[in-house]
Length: 190
Image (tube, rainbow, N blue to C red; front, side, top):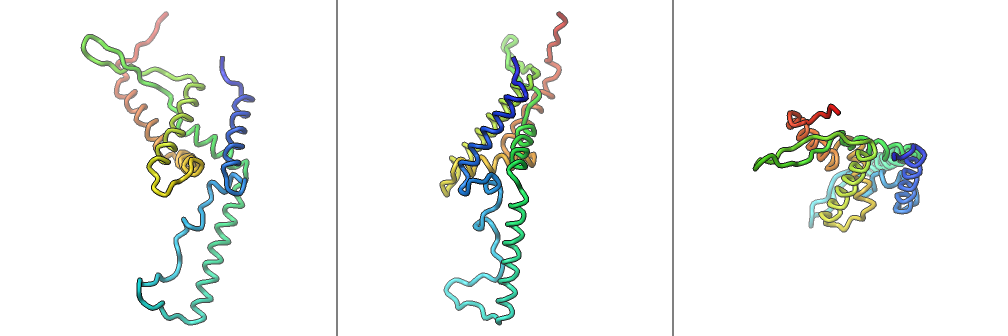
């Protein structure tokens, strides 16, 4: 028994609602927009212990206007990303990590043989979601600054959307192993 498109849409809506609640502002796009801390600082850095660099009023005004323009551009980019776009991004991230095959181990005498098996669409989707969640949990454990699971999950979803990240790497490893062992594929004739 498979999942109907209506059930899948409900699951996506539930995931979007959970992510929306995890967002500090209640908007999905804020999970994917870079924060002010992540933005590189523009301007000259101070040398520690030394006096601040001398600058003219015109240079200070130009620096203020360029940083304001950069902040406005980032805000416009974040505003352009609507909740529907974020849901599409999550769905695309899951699709990008879906494996087509799995590899089962079986023994032939004393030798371990890897046999590739095709996956159903439901199994494929479940593996993809599981791998993304595992990668986010692993990222959270390794985070030094105490990153929240929502931040780690948002980052993993963004990486999966870009066809990068741990979940996509795992999918590629499984496909490579299945391709290397395609000679062990047993075809059924009955």
